[in-house]
Length: 65
Image (cartoon, rainbow, N blue to C red; front, top):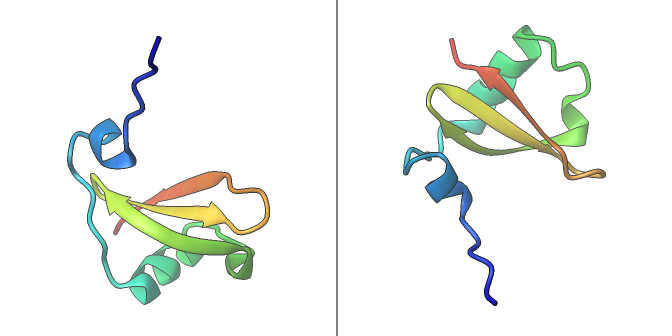
């Protein structure tokens, strides 16, 4: 039995893109990201920026302005 694994691109309906990481971080800090040094910008999708925690690997997102 094989398990089908979908990529983040497929899970988001093919709507992944990279934007300027500095703008993404500025937006996230304006929206409440209090510890930006603990996160790395990963991608954007459907007007949201996604960040991954460098220690725990959990994702958070913020709506783009």
